[in-house]
Image (cartoon, rainbow, N blue to C red; front, side):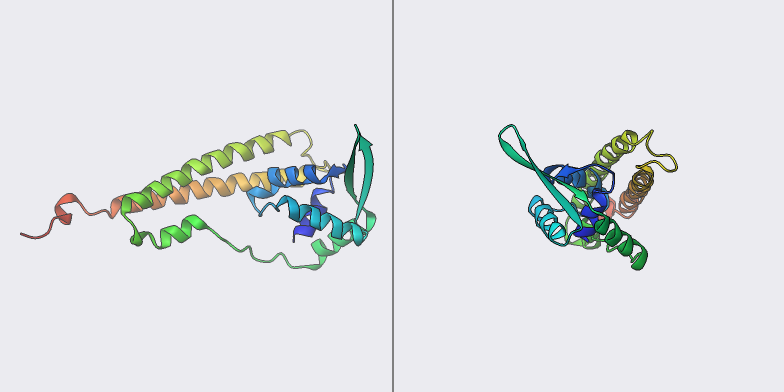
Amino acid sequence: MTAHAILGLLTFGDELTGYEIKRRADMTLRFYWVSPARSQVYTELRRLTEHGLVRADTRSDGGRDVTTYAITDAGQDALRAWMDGTPAGFPVLKHTVLLRLLVGHATAPEQTRRMLADYLDDLDGAIADLAGVRESLRGADGVGEPFRFPSIVADWGLDYFAAEQRHTRRALESLREHEPTEHEQEPPA
């Protein structure tokens, strides 16, 4: 999957250094996929180059060698074969907040509420970040434009984060509704 993600990041018509690919992954993939580590990016780039799916060009830049990468026709074909020949698959949800909520009874109720409130703060930050990415794609997101599909992904992500906010607020409200009152917490006399 990392190889396909890197090939996909190289399909926008530009040549990128490994560092730039990592930056692009961090700016985009992190919203819906694990952004690969820098070492993983370079390992995949070497492997993709060896298989002829990516072309590496090295040039001197101020006394140091800089290597840029571009997808080859064979890389485009491999990416297309993956896109056309594999099922969409169902996403694996690794949701740490839901895992912690599942066992919320193992801690004090206020700790669970604090965790959910912190998650709401994190969602606010993610929404702001993704909204900035989405805004940067405007003007190149029309039919036939290079960033049409990334724009659709950004819109999907914004909707997803908004749904996460609704679910988190609903969980917080449910926790408040089911809190015992002070009178209920007192031991019987």
